[in-house]
Each structure stands twice: as C-alpha cells, then as structure tokens.
Image 1 (cartoon, one colour):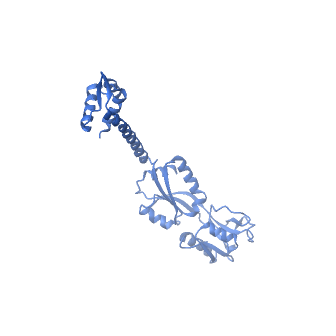
Image 2 (cartoon, rainbow, N blue to C red):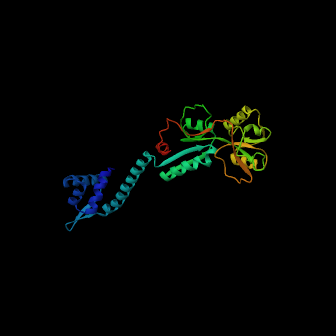
Image 3 (cartoon, helix red, strand yellow):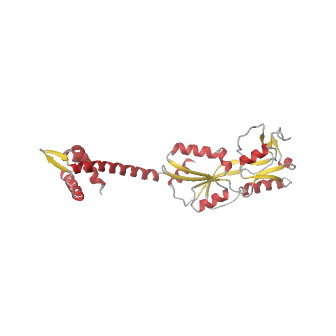
Length: 289
C-alpha cells in the first residue's frame, strides 16, 4: 500500500475538508480527490460520505484511520531505525579482549562508547590473542583488544592504544619487596607462577625468553589461566610472577608490584579489526577511539 495515499487520507480525515487538506499537503484539490478515490478503489470501501452537507468518515473510514495512523507511525519508526543502524547507533558490537585489558583500557573504551551510543548492544567475552585473530579473519567478531607479538603481522587493521611494561609481582614479605626497582636476574632463585601456555602462549613464551636473556631459566612452580589467580598464588607465597601492567588492585600487605630495571620492550595493546568488515557499529566504534 502506498504510504503517500495513507498520509493524504489521514490529513483529509483530520480536516474533513478536501480543500484545506490539499493546502496542507501542497496539492491541488482535484489531485487530492483522485488520491482518495484511488485508495477507496484499492480497499473496495467508501472512506468518506456526505451527511447533511457535512463531509464525514464512514464506519469503515474510522476503522481504517486508526490502522493508517499506526502504519504511518510504524513506518516512521522503521525509517528512523534504519537510518540509525546506518549511522552505527543501533546494532551489536562483538568485542573480545585479553584479560590484561580489563584493568584500564576496556573500562575506559566501553565507558566512552556506552555514553556515546547507549542503544548499541555489547557482546563481550575474554579471548586469547590467537583466537581473536582467527575470529576476526572469519568474521565471527567485530573488534579485538589484544597484545600482538612484537613485529608480528596478521593481516588485520590495528591501532595501538597503549604500551605497557612488564612488572614483577612479589609476595609482600619477599626480600626484594622493599626495593622500588629490581633486576630480572635477581629473581633467578625464586619459584615462578606463570600463565599456562595454553591460555597465554605469547606472554608465557616472552617471559621465559626474557628470563633466559637475563641468564636463567625460570623454575615454574605453579601455572594459572588468569591473572587474578596468579596474583592470589603469589600472595600465598607460592612464587613470584611477571605481569603486564596495569595489574589487578590488591592489598599491598599481600602482594607488591615492582618495576624492572632491565631494558625490556613494552607490550602493545591494540584494537584490531578486519578491513573487510562493513559493520556501521564497528565504524562508529573506531571513530570514537
């Protein structure tokens, strides 16, 4: 059904005068009369009648008017929603992130995006860098927040949003806890608590590599899949660890974080996406960051 005919009908029904309605619609009266006649032929009902020289709605016309108003309202809402989807103001953003992003970058980015686009649905989940890379290439997610290995290339578009150092996590009673900065080699005699290689292979391998460059192979006493568990195990005295800053907040009477004086490369934290992804919501997110 032609929405223009519905609009013309509603205006005529409101005015109950074809002449005044034609002025409102910027039409000639004969043209408007032909539109109403065409609508009546399409419906096969009479919408208006003359009663004692008055122009009135028929019973069918009154019923049709209620439906016509609803149809026009729904059409306007649908048009507006389509425009908002095109602008990236409606839809879903599928974002995955490594755990180390949860302490500063993720809250900052999502807080700003939620404030700017409150009607976008956020589909969020932690995911390793390797899985994010694969999911982005396969189009199963829109945005990745991960830490690529230095010099690596995965064919994705990336934007570095922070460069973060490794820090030592020590039990508060550790002999080196009173120092502000320590050398990695000074931890050679300690047990280590590290990420399991299955959940964080790049970080695990890099930490082992840094230790070997410092002259020792770390003695891994415990492994854990997440940073909170690692910090808890350090607090329990099961070993020391190396973590990417920012780190989880914790009671300084249990665990302390100390800078490393070694010349170690920082870890990039990147927002990554596929250049082939046409999502307007993704485009809006990238404009924000």
